[in-house]
Length: 284
View 1 (cartoon, rainbow, N blue to C red):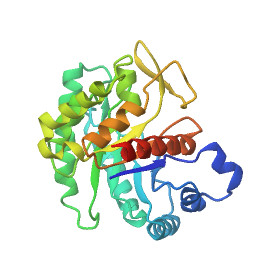
View 2 (cartoon, helix red, strand yellow):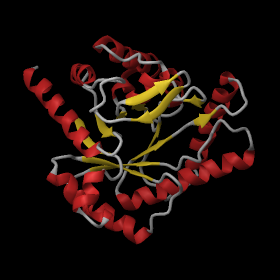
View 3 (tube, rainbow, N blue to C red):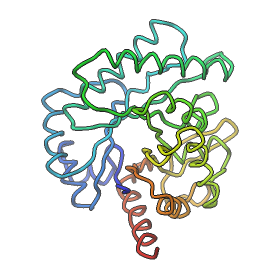
């Protein structure tokens, strides 16, 4: 089953509602059934507010995911940096319990001055250590860690790298950001076959788990070093286009929340994707 929703607060939400806890009401109005909350610069949401959110989302039957702080970098070989990254993950997971959220999206790491191989090996090793540490907690509940495919060449997060990381543990599932994948590879996603190849890579590492994913989608401007900035569906220069992906999602029976990250128009573009997918489903 595919669910659709936005990340964060679109500009049209802010014109109509004053309180962020009105988000479930906003999503129901637009017939959307998932949402991603971002802890971009730290886990600063008060417990009382998180509980209020969680109750409202549960009552509205809206699936919630959380994006962990951007400060996380499991490629960094420094032990103090590793401890801080673990702290951001643990803090996010504890807040997720109050939010009734199950999926935690995070950026795996950046290369810094290392080679890509060195940075990836550090990332893999440290996420394996992370799982061992999380197993020592008894108050985190059920969760999925969702490392994200990244759009800049200096970041760890190609499709194959994410697939390898997800092979560590069944609680790790991919966040496929197709805008990032397209930007990293200079516009590689054009046809259904291009999208199918992404899932073929996952299947080669994850077997039957290949169709359990979390998805981000937006058009993204890119250059020689990959991602530059997020765009909206109004853009006609940069991709990727959603329709071929929608056909592949239906064909492969993918189970996912599909989060729109369009710049300022994430609610509108989530509705557009839902409508495209529903038409394709009806015709097939």
